[in-house]
Length: 119
Image (cartoon, rainbow, N blue to C red; front, side, top):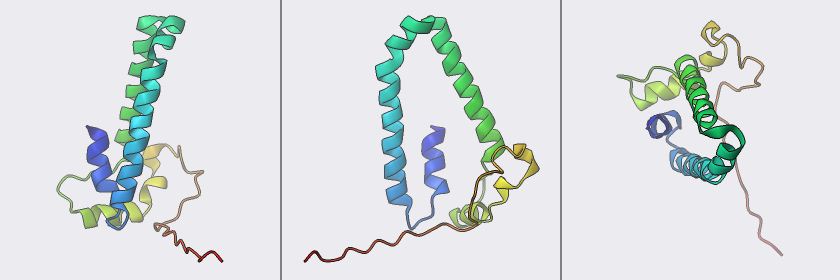
């Protein structure tokens, strides 16, 4: 549920449709991977170990969401877009400088594609 809510808010309007489609495909691919590997992992680490692994992944995701995602309650999409463009989350002390090594740009990068006619 969190995934679908986040996807509708974090992408700028110009690329929202394409970005949502890409991330939806990635989400379904991850679901497919879990489906295909579940029984093999149960054989390797047992049922309780598998659910412990799922629980640890859920806790890691919750920590990530808590520290890295901005509050969007009561804000318009334009305000959220402006806040995400300000790039302040990569330089805040709240995130414990986990991703300060990333080379990020304060603006979204638009990709221009030109198709040349084949001769």
